[in-house]
Image (cartoon, rainbow, N blue to C red):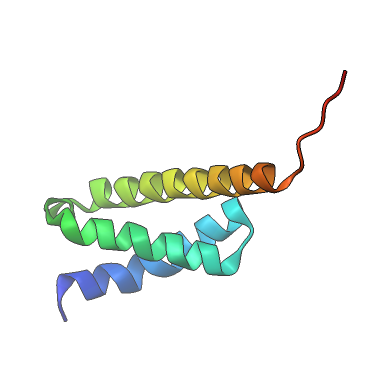
Amino acid sequence: MSQIIIIVNQYYPLLSRYARRMVGDKFAAEDIATQVLEQCWELSSLWQQPKQLRTHLQSATRIQCHKWLLNQALQIRKQKPATNNQ
């Protein structure tokens, strides 16, 4: 079994649950976990150091969740009509 498959099997459930707790949306959380693992694929040097890998994956997931939440807030803000409180 290739190393990336082992990493995905080990970390995808953890990352998707972590992301779901942060964003409250199952499908967005799954997308975030997938994006983070795709980034991991590109940074294969992390695979050799499990402690650094876990830390990197958790940090990257948290950052992606914050980006998703910010994007959602901006979308809501754009949809609200402008009001003048004078």
